[in-house]
Length: 212
Image (cartoon, rainbow, N blue to C red; front, top):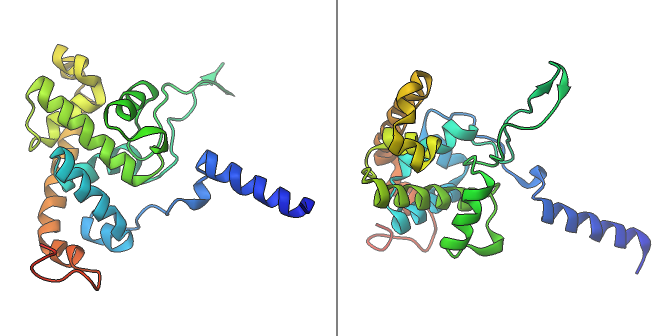
């Protein structure tokens, strides 16, 4: 095999294995409007609807979680801490990707949801399915309604054990963020009612009544 071709194949393989950000879409330009988001990335609607059908979390809540956690950036990680104030050091957590899922719970998701080794935190399909899976488990364990974005987010951020202990009550900033997520989720749901028919019926083979 020609050396140049071999080098190209190796590079492509490395890019695929690492989930390089060059293949990731840019964050939506208007993150305050879920219809505009889905207009830019229509496949994201399909992923969110699939997660909703599978796990029960409304689409607006899923998208509000992603907006809060990563601002729709696929490869984001928490910033590194600084040793002695200026030396880049460890990251505060292993959170990664659209949903900022951490390594241990991501491993649980891959085992429990049958997503297998192909699930990637940098792919919106898997990130939204993860959020749906996590919220469904939260609902089953803690009884939080899937229609309650504020407390679902508190349990998402603190972990189910932390939420059960009420750790969020000592974190007023987190509680403000959770209320903001709640407001955004409700706004996204209201916006979605204005554009969902078009999103469901956008392909040439989708027509009434089969796309409703």
